[in-house]
Image (cartoon, rainbow, N blue to C red; front, side):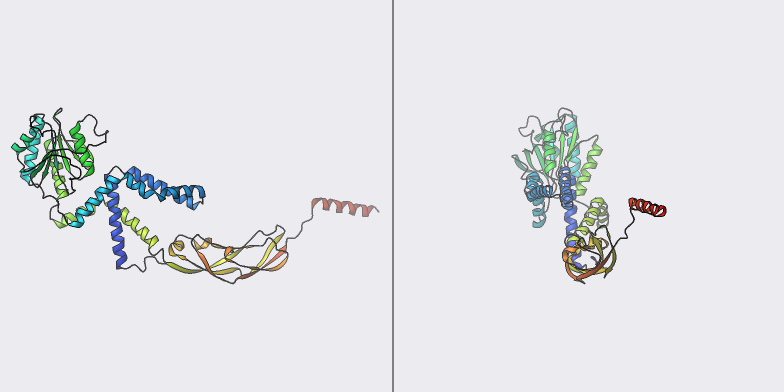
Length: 407
């Protein structure tokens, strides 16, 4: 009996953990972007391809094989922006670049008070709080400022008579690093129904980064927040403060290790469980499953193509000892009770006859090769079935018997 988890070592545990983290990251990324339907479609095509291979649908498998040969190019074309974000985050993490310092509570209060005044006076505004993602690639133009955030400074920037009031203000480290900046526009017309260009710019940046974008509509006097690709309207200032606190807590968690560990375990626990189970299955199939193993089974001999007037009397020996060689996963996924050794007895006649057992006589799962057969010959005794008298023969015998009695 093969035991795939019997020889697991420390390096295997590290390998499983690293791949599980990668799968979890991909699953969370797919969940947060607009990619789920595309990924589901790719998995459906992969399932159809595997089914076609299993059912030996040659033409279908050949077409899908050509598709998957260029799948990498297709993924790059479809997810080029998302892949660029991933590489940027990897670069930031690997180079040890620190994100902006968290906003002080007083700075958050200043923002909320200014936004309330803007909404009351119907003054349009767009404020961006940077997260940990770099924004330089997405922001165009603007004027560098570097001034400390304050109510008079924000009021002067978004004054309708100010030349830079139509642009966005970027807040980093409790300071306004840039104003009058232009942001990428979103194409999510479902969320952008009945809103203006400021909302489109805020949502566009929220789709491409982890920034927290706040918009004030000068037409309706409402406040909206764009974050993680979603645009939501604020119902009251308490809700805005709660969302801002959530953003700061997520981007700059408190140093309480215990609470942070529990939160990490509870967060996205379904995705974590799925990624771990999927990693174990992949490791089970490709690591111990790829190692070559040799297993011996005793397989009974079955007879096929026997003429209808013959019956098997005896098979000597009744079974064959066969040794198979192949990857372990082929043994894991196969049922040894379905192994067969078949002998073609179509040319057999009444009596005994010896047949050679060759590799092609052994029916086995794909991926396994026959290494040894013992014995290589088998003796099969067959005999004829007893013949039954036909109805017309019985009638003729009765007539003949009656004629003999008359004579």
